[in-house]
Image (tube, rainbow, N blue to C red; front, side, top):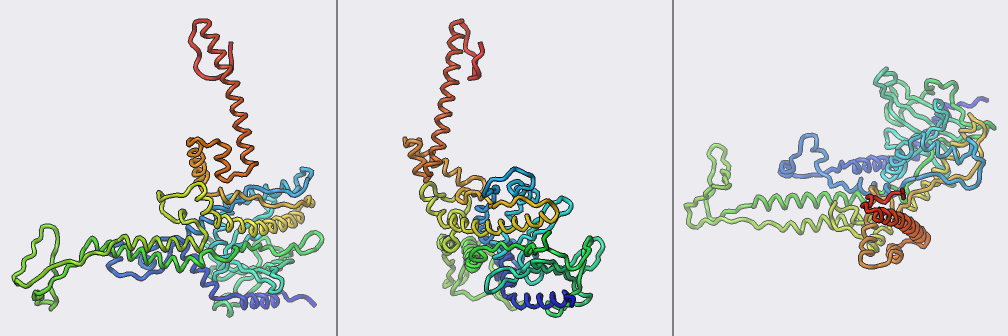
Length: 499
């Protein structure tokens, strides 16, 4: 009896939907809003006027955005620098030792990996979909975001084993050129042995449950469903590889504190506002009423104005402003709290120019962030190995079989991965201070926490450099002496000895 793939897909998709939590999708959207700085606030019209907000800003009027900074601080420590093979190969073109780096470069992952890690840190998961790029003759890797209730990717896992059973990608069609199928919804289902493509029936987008699906074929598709098997007929495995952030979204503990920081900042703005425009008070005087409106006339106060009172019992005063230092301390408290719960060092959340740690203090503050980044490297490294293994099986469908080798990503040192080499620069400055204070170079490197192997490399390099300088200096002195013997001034520079 032939398999009714349409019916199977309907059942699979409904099962997939049944296991999706609407609150989780809403949380994904919330995390994305906060990462972009869209923080809902409720402030007075006076504060809006003071802050100079335009109409387009009134929905999200203010944000001291720590959320994106927390994401960046972690993801800046995640960077694959190369691929390491676990055993010797013969150097052939289809050797994994050669294929892996070429696929990485061809797919632009030196830069695209940043987007992948940032999306995983923000949403708790991000995905790489592996497909065959016929034009370039290589496996193509495509980063996709998590399903947010409207579009994106989600995976259905076996509750017993945690293995991916199938994955779904859903999105809305928007073709600005032909307009074909605009307004309809596309859905691809990825199984271990096949890929099924669907499109919503005309007029059926009445919410998820009410949507009716029809099989769909893209240009170039010759069969439905698309087989996803190797030369031997074995399933290649699900084409969607999850990159799950350890511990879930890094913003989960940050968002409540972000709200408090925004509130503290607005309190500070209100405090400085009242300090600049002190609140005046008057007592013992009859108010002046505007006869046309029945309301009290406003008192004009400003430079050059004189206030005159006819009632001898009248008094005029002003409320003392609150010390802004108290509000500033409140803002700092919430930044410190965010640093404590995210394990991001406090100095990374402060403004440029603030006091920065160095030496042993820097290392101590970095411990939590480095540990977290290292854990991410382990989890994401396993996902990259899965991408490579799937890509190799897909490659073998169109090429002579590859030479199987264990291949693993090589990560940049998480403790030295801050952009611009800031940590390296601080380390160099600290080292220079130690040496200038009279500490031997080897002892200074040990004080910075360098291991014996790295110290030995530096000392050997310094020794070779010193020996080379001695040879060059000796040659220069000999050349200068010959010139003096000939009553000629020496030639400037330390070039090679020329007679």
